[in-house]
Amino acid sequence: MNLTSKIKSFLKSAKKPLIVILGPTASGKTALSLKIAHAINGEIISTDSRQIYKGMEISTDIVKQEDQKGIPHHFLGITTPDKVLTMSEYAKLALDEIKKIYKRKHIPMLVGGTGLYISAITQAYKVPKVPPNLKLRNRLEKEAKLKGSEFVHKKLAKLDPKAAAAIHPNNLRYVIRAIEINMATGKNKPDLKNKPEFNTYFIGIEWPREKLYGRINLRVDNQLKRGLVEEVKALLKKKYEKNLPAMTSLGVKEIIPYIKGKSPLEECIETLKMNTRRYAKRQMTWFKRYDNVEWISPEKLEKLL
Image 1 (cartoon, helix red, strand yellow):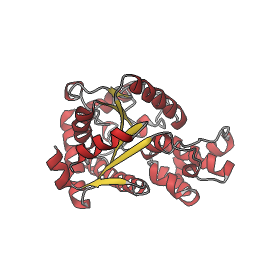
Image 2 (tube, rainbow, N blue to C red):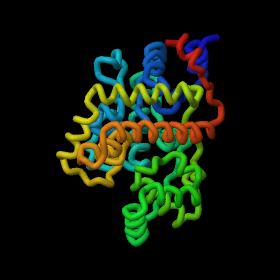
Image 3 (cartoon, helix red, strand yellow):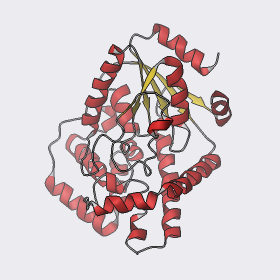
C-alpha cells in the first residue's frame, strides 16, 4: 500500500484527523504536502515560526502563490517583523483554523519545521503562565550582547535540552523565555502537556546527512539568486529592533554583516550554510522524539513526487 492509500485508509476511521508532514529544512516538505493535500482535499497550516512574517518570503522560503496549486495555505505572511507571536498565541490561531477546516469538510495538514509549533497542536502543550522576570531578562540580554547568543543558548541547554534542541540560538527572545519558564517552574516545556485532541498521522522526511547538506547549500544559493540580499536590505530600512525573532532568523542575521560592510559576502554565505546545517541537525533531534512517524527516504520521496 502506497503512502496516499495509507492516509486515505487512516482518514476513514479517524474522528478528528490531522496530517503532519515534518522534516529538516530543505528536505522537500512543501512538494510532498502539495501532493498529499491534492489527493485528500487538504488545507495546509504552516508550522514554521518565521513564515508568519511579511517581507521575508525569500529568507523563509515561503511557497509562492502560483506554486500552491490551488491548495489553501494558512499562516504565511500574517504579521509584520516587528511583532512577536508566542507559542500559545500561535496554538490558539491554529486550533481555530483547524475547526474552520473541519467545517469546510477538508483535512487539516500541519507542514513545517518548527518542532514547538507542531507539538503545541499535536501534543496539546500547556504553556505555563509565568510573568516576565525583567531582572533575569536584562541580565541574559547583557550576556548575549557581551558573549553572544550561543552563550545564552548553552545555558538553556543545561536547564532544558529538549527546548534548546527546538529553539535556534539566534532566537534570543524565545531562548530567554524558555529559561525564564524553566527557572520559575522547574519544569521542561515539553513535559507540560494536555491530552492530545486529534487523531494524528505523522510523516517525516529523512535524508542522509551529506545529501541533505547538499540540498541546504543549493537552497542558500537559490535564495541569493532570488534576491536574499535585497530582501534583508529592505528589512533593515524599516529599522526593526535587532533582537526581534524576525531579525535573528536564518538568512537575515547572517547577511546583515555584509550589508553593513563588516564582512565579505562569501564569508556570510558560508556562515549561513553552516548555521542552516546546524539548525537541520537540531530539527531532526527534536523530530526523533515523536512516536509513530512514518519516515520517508529520498528514494521513496522521489517516487511519490
